[in-house]
Image 1 (cartoon, rainbow, N blue to C red):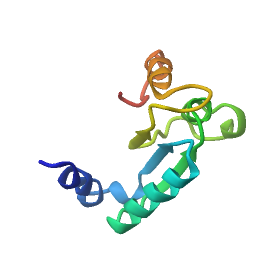
Image 2 (cartoon, rainbow, N blue to C red):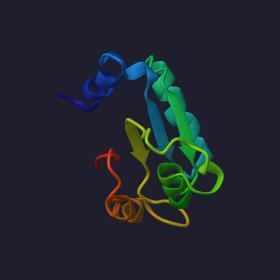
Image 3 (tube, rainbow, N blue to C red):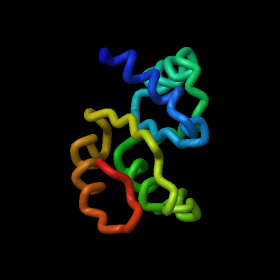
Length: 107
């Protein structure tokens, strides 16, 4: 399958429309382009935007402004930029992999 064919699986998979997408992107223009691409592909999921790697981890682990988030509910898809400010995408992956929480997300 080519990348666009895989991408379309998100919108057709049963029950996917109520799932959250976490977009980790520090460039506002790329955030807009990504949201537009999702809309153009008829992907209607809620999208949470984290502006950097630290905010992404805060969202995933319910810290900072996300302290009241239900941390048993993880995003179904994480779109992660590798070249982020504050903490790059590879560091986010390393920190995420350290969790031992039950029912946590898969990398």
